Length: 239
Ligand SMILES: Nc1ncnc2c1ncn2[C@@H]1O[C@H](COP(=O)(O)OP(=O)(O)OP(=O)(O)O)[C@@H](O)[C@H]1O
Image (tube, rainbow, N blue to C red; front, side, top):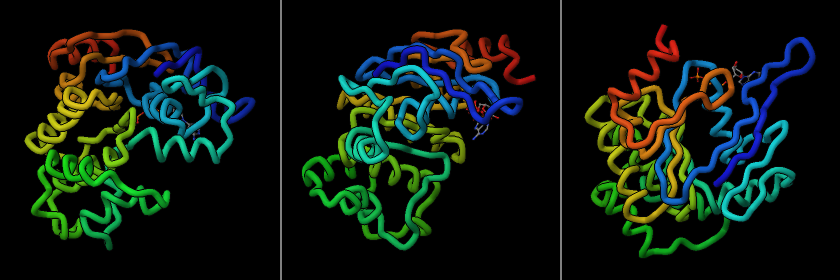
């Protein structure tokens, strides 16, 4: 996917905040990109605009051959349902539904039929086969996030977006979820874009984009946690 000169301004007049300033970047299909930067640098705004959850003030966002800017809300909803998946820090599972019902919820909402073979593969991959009848409250945080990941993958989206998907997990559990994201990219060629504060999480990506004050100010390929931490320190991210 591709963003061209994407700007986002919140508010008006004296209260206007420029959250993104002419961001141009290509996100390779089948790539795993981490987005980092100081608090308030525009990471969430970047993700929301790229995913069609929010509309840029100007500029163009393209997914495959589809231009998102100018789409009406109905078409954006369709696109979000069919072509992108989301994983959030706070899992966002429905407590009253079982694991299986949570994973198949996107199909119930859109009135479409799941590809059963793919669904079985996804459930197998996230290691939840034995937990399929359980409810979220009966699962650990890491297991809940794996349900959320399975739900995001169930529709076979082109891109999976993660907003701090490991933010609420301990190191060991976070590593399991990150490994799953890595495997998703490697095994299925799906694209993953993830916002994170954690250099170790970012080291699972192929590329790290560093945002500061609404601009991409740096980029790292094949990042190691140490290299990412050094760049973040240089940005003053942790002052
Ligand atoms: N709905 C909004 N209305 C007004 N300003 C907003 C809104 N959302 C974000 N902003 C502002 O836009 C800028 C970028 O915010 P954003 O949430 O994208 O940053 P971030 O890098 O994700 O931050 P954090 O790491 O703290 O979550 C900030 O200055 C923020 O205060």
